[in-house]
Image (tube, each protein chain N blue to C red):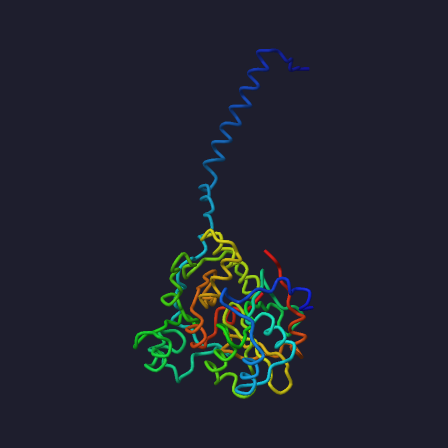
Amino acid sequence: MARITPSGNAGSKLVRAILDLLHVSKKMNLKALPPAPKRPQLPAPKPSGRPIRDPHWKPPSGWHRPARSKGSFTGAEGNSPFKLNDATADHLGLPRGTEIDFVNGTPDFGPFTHKGLGGQPPGTYNVDGINLNRTHDYNATVSTIADTMGMSKAAVREALRINKINLHHFSGDIMQLVPTNIHRNIHHSGSVHLEGRN
Amino acid sequence: MIEEIEELIIPATPDSRPDTPETIAEFESRISHLPEEYKNLLLKYGPFAFNGSAELSGGGINDLCLTVCRGIGSQYTIAEVYEEMEDVFGDHWIPFADDAYGSVYGFDRNDETIWFFDIEAGFTPTKIFNSMRAFLDAIIVEPD
């Protein structure tokens, strides 16, 4: 009966043979495998700019437009600039011919936001965690402004009151600080209304 | 209870002053009566805000915040909003408070129920409380 006797020489040959076999097998397997998939891409950063206008957007049921007595859209209803008539522009202290752009139903008050005079908060903030709950988003915006400006939250609230500034949900995480008289006079549906509330 | 948060009431702005019986009487004869509970607060503080984040609990809408309660004679006046948006309020409501977004709280001149006029829904009114007392008692303030 043949016996395999382990010996140093025979053992090392066996080990080497096994390793060679594995190496060949590994190389063969590598050749047989499809190319390694690319590493998954990190998610794109949250959009922090203006939303893209959807040319197919149509006013949904319950959408609110500015009063016809205050001006008219220069293009698609709710998805183009709203040109103030002279009486409204005069009333708001804006130049005649002023247009307020509407993007997918929501006005972009960006050009009219408070400019941050005298160390006061500037006009547009990207606020993390916006969830369209009024109280939550107000507090989140106050915190963001406070952190950005190096102010206390109480000082931010007071600055908003003294300067008569409203928050406006524009789109996504974009909050705009809009003078109350402009914000209130241009009746509209904000993103809270259009996108729903948590 | 409004009494429980009185220590967190602050003037709406540094220039705000308590209203007087005379200015309130003039407002009531010119525009509308005011609920007694609210007049008492105006006599004490004038237009007021809160030292912290204020919200309303238990109303007809569940995520309402409150930034300013308006007064009669100095800055943040009721008349300012009423006259600016007469087309919205007409002879029916009197706007007396604001949220952070420019929405308005108004009371019904007939039955003193409290309504919320949502700016982001074209100022569509929704009834939220049955009385001014209920509105004031629903205020919760979270100090910083």
